[in-house]
Amino acid sequence: MAHQPLDDLELDELETFLESPSVHEECQTFVMAHGFLTALAICPFSLPTEKWLPIVFEEEPNFKGAKEKERIEKLVIRLFGDIQKELESEEDFLVPCELEVSQDEEEFSELQDWACGFMEAVFLTERHWFESEKEEDVAELLIPFMVASGLFDDEEVTKIRSNPQLTQSCIDKIPDVVTDLFLALRTEVEKKRTPFPANKKGNKKSGPGKHGGKHNQGNKNTRS
Image 1 (tube, rainbow, N blue to C red):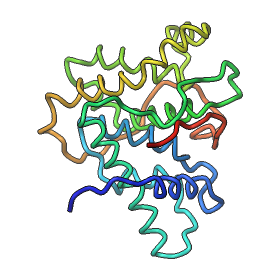
Image 2 (image 1 turned 30 degrees about the vertical axis):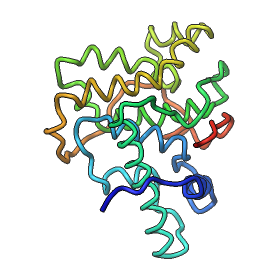
Image 3 (image 1 turned 180 degrees about the vertical axis):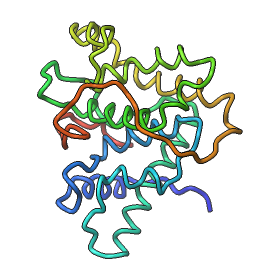
């Protein structure tokens, strides 16, 4: 069956559900889930749906019934498919939020949520991002996401974050770097995509929660 892209109404439906009282307080927002799924789509090995879908929700939502459960889960899976198709097209990648972060460590922007979701998927599948001769290139390409997420206290990241102009210059590159990462990790390994077990890793700051909580202070771009 051919992939059916989500339309605007379905995108709004999914976004509303992920921010509703029906989900756990640590459930990923739509923007965070988009970042999470983007990194999974870039990863050169396929994580089975049953492994990553529960991570989006944190805990099983209070679905109204089996019909709603099936409906919402299919919307998330189709969103993943949309992202995969967008990456494979090699056209300009659209991040679903403004490319801006707050200099206040207590204030999250939507881009920070998106980057936190992205890096969570990188931690989940970490060994598959760095197992080739492109390890150094991949590490360099991940810097804008590390800067945007606010999760890291590495010297290089801290230096960039301390300079607002440098920070903005760095995060402005994210859409292009998404495509660069996809090409770097997938052009030579497409035939090797197989399911795998993976563990979370990563040297990051401790925070108030798994995702830093729900934050919706950024302004979304208009979806076309």
